[in-house]
Length: 274
Ligand SMILES: NC(=O)C1=CN([C@@H]2O[C@H](COP(=O)(O)OP(=O)(O)OC[C@H]3O[C@@H](n4cnc5c(N)ncnc54)[C@H](O)[C@@H]3O)[C@@H](O)[C@H]2O)C=CC1
Ligand SMILES: O=C(O)[C@@H]1CCC=N1
Image (cartoon, rainbow, N blue to C red; front, side):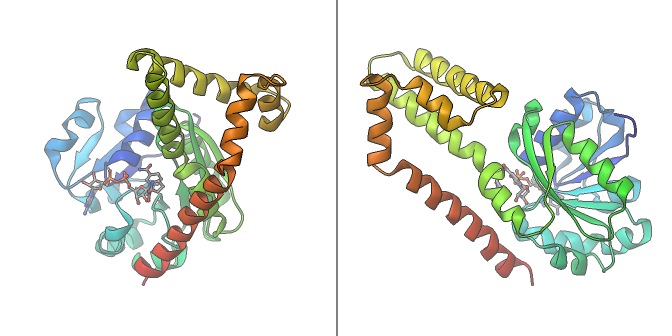
């Protein structure tokens, strides 16, 4: 990475830890990363890796070029308001990873007129296989856009969207998406066991199949639908599985689930954004 801005993660929980872990594995200097939380002892492992840890959000903000807001959406208003003065004084770039909290609300809570990126990452960032959607408000400079992109690309794919509501679609596809695949894996492991495999064997085969399918889809120049057809021999075994999935409504189930996810993001903006 050519430029290495100092980062402050406000709320060192699951998502922040996934991004920080991905960055460190990618060679980002630990000394350039601050992590905050409510209890220092819960961040002892981060301190041991060379990160700065503190329970004082304002101290981390004052030290940072980029502040990543990674607390739960339900407490973001209180946390943002308590750091507004130091944000206005130091003018760092703010990146919020919170689902469903609009730029408009964040700008208000942070005292107005701030450079703000909303980012919807996902937890595979930890193994540098993340997928993030990014949206910048007009105050974000070209350099700040580039810096944000560099940071998020160090954890995987990072794509810009040009309309803020599209972040709810990103949430439905990739932000929440790992959980869908984990559920499918859970179900395949259970079904494999029911068919007589040991749990260990069912788990290994399931995970390797998910990895293989994803890697093949990524490397292929044809769409996943064609790759699926190539697995289905006429009157063979896969065809029976796929016919059963479709007859029982799997595509509609996935559509409904993702719609519910996006609806929830919009409802959170209403509930929590005032
Ligand atoms: N978990 C996920 O897969 C994803 C989460 N997100 C977003 O990331 C954000 C965080 O979610 P998670 O990491 O899952 O939650 P989490 O609960 O694991 O992490 C939040 C952290 O904030 C800390 N915290 C609480 N009050 C604080 C305060 N006043 N100051 C500083 N830190 C404080 C908590 O100790 C906790 O470690 C949410 O806004 C969520 O919408 C976005 C994409 C994916
Ligand atoms: O479930 C949530 O609200 C967060 C946002 C996307 C993934 N986890």
